[in-house]
Image 1: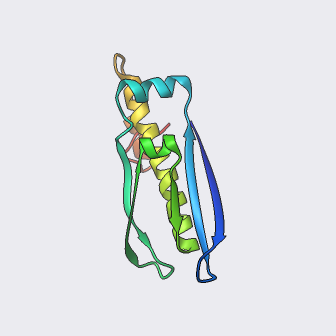
Image 2: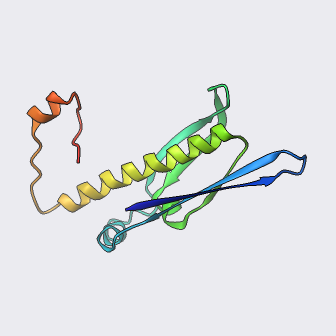
Length: 128
C-alpha cells in the first residue's frame, strides 16, 4: 500500500490563499481483492474535528473512508494547520486500513502474538 499526497494552492477571491490536499492510495492486487471481498469501500477509517491555528477544535469534521482513499478526493483547507491535520488524517486512515487488511488476511489461519514482546515494548496492540 502506498499513499500519494498532492498539495496545491490557489488565490482566493479576496486575495488570500486557499489550499487543496488530495490523498490517494495505491493497493497491491492482494489488498484490492481483500477490499473488494470484504466490501470495505464504505468503511470509515478515521473521523476527527479539525483544529485552528491556535490548536482549538473547529466545526469542520474530517472523515476518511476507504472509498475516499481509493478515489483520491480533494479536501479544501483554509490554512496550513488544516493542511497538516488533513494530511495526518490520511496517514491515520491508511494505518487503520492496513490493520483491517492484516486481520482480513489472517482468516483461515492462526496468528501468534508474543505477549512478552508486547509488554517489553509497552504496547497493548499487535505490531508489524
